Each structure stands twice: as C-alpha cells, then as structure tokens.
Image (cartoon, rainbow, N blue to C red):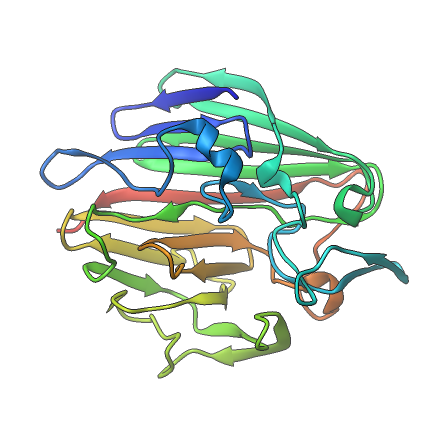
Length: 301
C-alpha cells in the first residue's frame, strides 16, 4: 500500500493508492492549531478491514440501484443486499488498488490515480478506465473523477469522506446549510421512488443553518441548476467552515449512527439507470465522464 501527501500553505492532504482513499485533510482551526477534518485510521493497513468506505472513491455506481441494471433493453444482474445494490457491489472501487500516475508538489500540488475496471466486473459492461485527481488550490480541495469506456455502460463516482470539523464527540456544534429546495423521495430501502419533493418545513430542510445535534440523514438532495454553493457547514468549536461546490445534479448527505461525522457525496441520482426521467448516467465510447467537486475551507467570522 502506498501513501502520498501533498500540501500548500493552507491544506495538507494524504491519499492512499488503496481505494484512492483520502486518509487525512489537515487544516488550521481558528486558534491556528492543526486539525484533521476527516474520520480515518492512522494505520493505512486498517482500511483493509473498513466496512464504511472511509474516504474512498466509490463506484462503479455510487448510489443505490434497485436490484438490477437496465441498459439498451438488456438486464444486467447486480449483487444486492435486501434487493439493493450500493456503492458498486461486493467489492467496489473503494476496495481496489489504484495506480498513482502523476504527482506534483508545486504551488498547486496534485496527485492523480487510475484504475481499470474490467468488462463485467460486478456485473457492469465495458472496460472502464477511471481516474481520480486530488488538487489543492489555495484553501480549496478539488476532487475530479473522470472515466472512459469501450462499451456502453453506466458510471457514477464520488468520494466518501466523513467530515468532522472539530474534535468533540458529537456534531452538536456543527451548523449545516443545504442550498437545495428539493430532495428525492425514497422508499423504505432508501431507493428513490422517482418523485422529487420539496424540503421546506420538513426534517430535511436545511435552507437556513441548523445544528446537526441528533440529526440522521441518508438523503439524496436535488441540486438546483443555478446553485453554485451546494452546502456549507461550520463548527462553533473550531471555527472551521467548509463549502461544497459541484457540477453534479445531486448530493447524498449521510450521517452514520456509529460515530459523529457527515458525508457529502456529490453524484448523479441514485437508481438513475432504472428511472428514465432521471439525469442519464450512461457513458458511451468516445465520451468522458466528469465529476468535479470542490471543498473550500475557511473560518466563521
């Protein structure tokens, strides 16, 4: 397992070639103290037994898919648990060794990783060449996922980092704003029904800042076409603030029960391959899949 660290004057980022995992993101809090703002293991080998995708690139399809994949009038069986396929199957991209193909330690440092997913891996058609680029630009972490294929397929990649902006044992001092007026309605198994519903005056309404104390989310939010700032979170304790910007049509926001943290999974709609009116997740030969997301760090004033 290989580990690489890039840094600038604001952020230090450590990435593993296993799962293209973000192991650490170090930033300064309001007192100038260095803090890791993602949940992870100090020992890289511990990720081999991780079951919650800490910091990993998840794919070939990050969101939930109901039972099987429908593509060009053909059905592709997928691995499911209780009828749901999640994060690419039994052993998705987060459990694969990627190749470190480029690195730069200049003023805007980056590391680029690559993984070739063979035709019919986890039931998905096409040899898919995927890349993950992590770059530091000022106070921003840019994460870019790209992919090309030699056969029509579907793809939906995201990073699965769990953020916690202070070192307390809860999220009670975290304030969250989600600039999304709608979410995808979901069934009991969290697969979308196909309907978009307003969030206003519901438990999913973060159109103004709210505390994350006691909040449990596993929710796909619809990103409005005009939205630039998708979500902002800050900690009253550390003073650290993080904004999320993406070119994707949805963001799945997830708070686990097991520990205090929150994921911002920028991606296409879950179950899009089986819901024709959802944004298409199809990728054809000659096309390039492109997910560009930015995590911008700063301070609450």
